[in-house]
Image 1 (cartoon, rainbow, N blue to C red):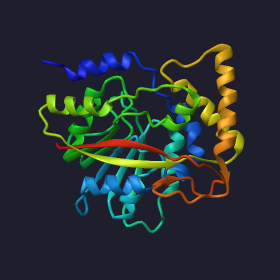
Image 2 (image 1 turned 120 degrees about the vertical axis):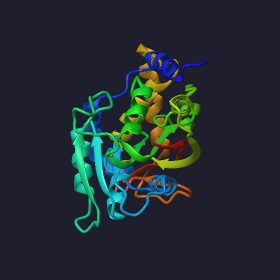
Image 3 (image 1 turned 90 degrees about the horizontal axis):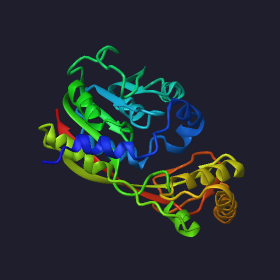
Length: 286
């Protein structure tokens, strides 16, 4: 029988290492405005079905896309992340009149959670929204299940990487097969004896930026996620073509794009080609 935990560990060894805390600290400055509470967040919380007064543990909370609306609905939340700057953004985003509360905790997936004070069954519901980036997914799922009294809810990408614009890659002649992370999570949860259910959230994002140079850097950096990323002179030529692509698609002033759920708020430049992702919402009773 397939050991999904071991299959994931083997898969993880073939992938580029996930970005560390320093990289997420760097992104924290504009993360709230770009990817804060959104249609995705609302759909996640609808599927989670929190009951009045339930407590929430939000692992990989980022800037508070789930923690903040939970507090606004009266829930007590412990929001955890390995990025101090993200935790700062999360704390700053909680309205002063929110009926609930958000506490934050510096925590990584591979930390000793019990030593960090997380006791078994200490929260009603545990979340991990788009945040399971760890070489040992089985250990992550065990940790979430251990501290949840009632339910665990996670989302993972199903298909193309959220780091990639398919339209951009098509125009550039680049290829990215993508990953089926959700299939591993479902298999691991089932193998551990849970009965997970799966629904899908389709999230459409319009990339927005503070400056044209920031957009150039973002799309040039995207090239590294290609399956056969160019190197040397080929990379330099590809980066120049990326600048030209951005020039053709970057619009000044905020835009209204049909069907977009996530878009920069107050940012002056927007790419006019939205990106759509499928996220598998996987939940099980703890």
